[in-house]
Each structure stands twice: as C-alpha cells, then as structure tokens.
Length: 320
Ligand SMILES: NC(=O)c1ccc[n+]([C@@H]2O[C@H](COP(=O)([O-])OP(=O)(O)OC[C@H]3O[C@@H](n4cnc5c(N)ncnc54)[C@H](OP(=O)(O)O)[C@@H]3O)[C@@H](O)[C@H]2O)c1
Image (cartoon, rainbow, N blue to C red):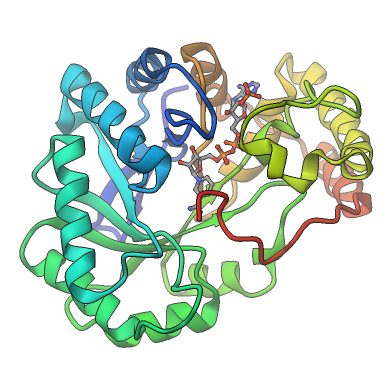
C-alpha cells in the first residue's frame, strides 16, 4: 500500500503524508550522525513521506543546517518543511529575524509550516504581537502556513483571535500511548476547528519500542532528563509493551510499528517520529500499512489504561 496523505488547513491546504519525520536527532541532544539523519530523510522521501520537522532550538540551528543539506540533495520541492521559532524569540521583531535565520540555515526562501515552539513561559510578551508577526510573514509569502506547538485550548483561542488573514493549521504536541494529556481538551478542540495534531515523541522517545527496560536505559543523551525512563515508569510501561509485542507478532511487525499505527490511524493525528538512521526511518514509515483489529485495539487500550506513569505534565520541551 502506498503512502496516505492528508491536508493541513482544509481541503485546499498543504498536502502532507500521514506520517512525517523529526530531525531533532541531528543535534547534541541526541547525538545522531548528521549523515545518518540525511540518509534517513532520503529514505523517507523514497517511501512517500514529505513532512519534515525541525526547529531553530535543535542544536542551536544545527538540525536546520543538516536538514538544509538533505533538502539540497533530495529536492526542496519534495518536502513540506516545518520549523519552529523558539519560545524565547516571540517578540514582533525577533520572530521575523528568527524566521529569516531559519530560512538561511535551511537554504529555502519560504517556510512551509512555521510553528511557535511553545507559548512564552513567563507570559510577558503579548501573544498578540507574536501572532501579528506570524501573520506578517504569511502575508509577505515567507511562510505558507501558521502553526503552533504545545498550545493549550486557551492559548489557541487567544492566538486565533489575533489572526484575520489565515488560521492556525496545526498544533504540535506530545502524544503517545502513555502520555495522553491532550485527549480531554486539546484534541477535541483541534478536531472541531480543523487544526491538525502533529504528534511529537510518538514513540515516547524509545520507551515504546521494546528495546528499553529497567536496567537497560539510554544514557548520555536528552533522555537522561526524561522521567519515563525511571525504573518505576519503565516497569509500568513494560506491561503495555507486552501487549504491543503480541499484536506486533500477529501482524509480523515491530512493537514500534504498532505504537505508531495506533497514533497515525487516528483522525487528524500525524506522528513525526525522530530517527537516527535510515533503517529506523523505513521501519517507522512501514507502520501504516497494516490494520490493528478491534479486539487488539481493545487489548491495547485496556493495557494502556492500567499504565500509571509519573512524569511532569507541564514539563517544557527539553530544549527549552
Ligand atoms: N514541539 C516540541 O516541543 C517537540 C518536542 C520534542 C520533539 N519534537 C519533534 O518530534 C520529533 C520526535 O520526537 P522525539 O524525538 O522526542 O521522540 P520519538 O520520536 O518518540 O523517539 C525518537 C527516538 O526513538 C528511537 N527510535 C526511532 N525510531 C525507532 C525505531 N524504528 N526502532 C527503534 N527505535 C527507534 C531513536 O532513539 P534510539 O535509537 O537512541 O533509541 C529516536 O531517537 C523530534 O525529532 C522533533 O522534531 C517536538
């Protein structure tokens, strides 16, 4: 089965693959090799993926620079480039400078999806100026779509009230089988208002791949700060991973593919797994072409409901 696509911003909006790729991994936070990430971008392109996600915050621009090389190699027009202005650059002038700097690093003249990475944590800068700056970029043709990330419903409502020429097309949020804070309010609001949910950490940073367990955790990268990798949380997650594993076996798939399938087949949700290699990239793209049965879905949901993980619901993106 070929790649499935959806649109950001309504029927006439930007066509994007139902699964994308995140390239935060090309930074000191993750320590993936630049060439490996470039190869991963090439691989997903071969498989029909066009959505690539980065941010000025990732490796202080390094991730954008690496993605820029990939765009040059595999053809800029084959991709929908999503990047982000960091939550420390939200003043009117600063935001426009940040967009220009991102474009320079990416080697592109127009950003396809420009996202406010997170709302001003100190709530000092009026959101009005941030959104007016976003709209100016849109009107000038420097960005094709206005988007946000880590916005609660109250933030979305306020942000949208300042836009008159365009609406917000997507909200990028942490979403995976064990971190589901957005289900109560944010998802219903976004669905109702045609705002796509771009799911970050769709594999819970690897905790939903089956390769990590108590005593076997990644060390020396950004996950040192991720509370999901604490023993108490990992042993909870293990019970869910067991169920995912049996579903995976039935479909001759990987645990990670079942976790991604659960997300990607949800209406309005587009996962962007981050990868360190072309192999991981191909595996993740392969998560779409099988169907979890109703019985399996029920088993996954009831196992997930029993998982009690303790992490900070309000924890800021780790590059904040
Ligand atoms: N908007 C925001 O605030 C925000 C925050 C975080 C991330 N993001 C974006 O979302 C993207 C994804 O989130 P994330 O990187 O936090 O977490 P993730 O996608 O859940 O996990 C990524 C990690 O999982 C492992 N992995 C990926 N594919 C795998 C596979 N097929 N098999 C086994 N392991 C696999 C890799 O690490 P190992 O191989 O080392 O285990 C990889 O670095 C990022 O690249 C970034 O673009 C946005």
